[in-house]
Length: 294
Image (tube, rainbow, N blue to C red):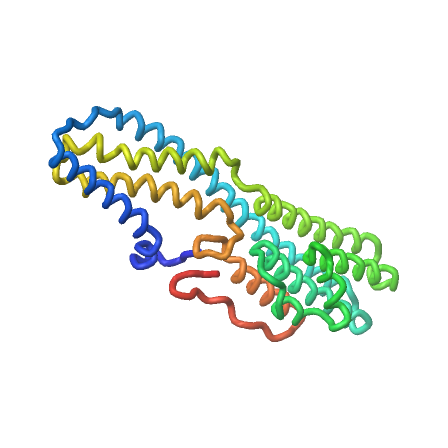
């Protein structure tokens, strides 16, 4: 996620220079053809076309932003639920009898959020997950088709062990299970966003209409703008292409690009809070890299 108050011009240029160059070359070609060949540019209803396209792109961008914001809300719920689980574990399980189990549940929750981050970003599970697991546990839950859900299931089993050992009662177990349900619901919402893209009509038609509009734009403006057509048409077309690109960038909030929800930073926040809750040393918060928080 870009957190700089002023966007980097270098980053913006790296994202738009290709469509900007293509637009400018096409606009120059249309302008040159208009002055070299004896033809009259057709009168096109660009105002009607542009207004309809702007409404279409605006609706698509709003839909994409809603997906991005929902992803951020779900991860906010995950942070709160992780804190609640650590607090209940620390307060309900007695010392020193359940000290090892208490620590294990907290560590497994840290491994869980990192495993979920890797799943959402389609990345392999590495040491940022296995570091928080016991050696005998690394090949069990992580071998499942959904490793994050496997870790969550095993946390529930450990809470049941605490109840059978008499360390917590059924009311306390129910309270902790309710937190696990909140975590599972948040994960389900994230997987829904990840596995259900925008309908193809939202992705395909705006792209076709925007490109067609950019092709017709200099033809309809050349008679009015004359030699200034390459400049005016390129800037106007770039506005529509930029809005189209914004929708593409926000559609998947759990990717691994500069525009996505900062999953790494939020997992680090959970790790810090949970380690401190059991008195362990915690790492530093994630810091932005060149104005981007990952």
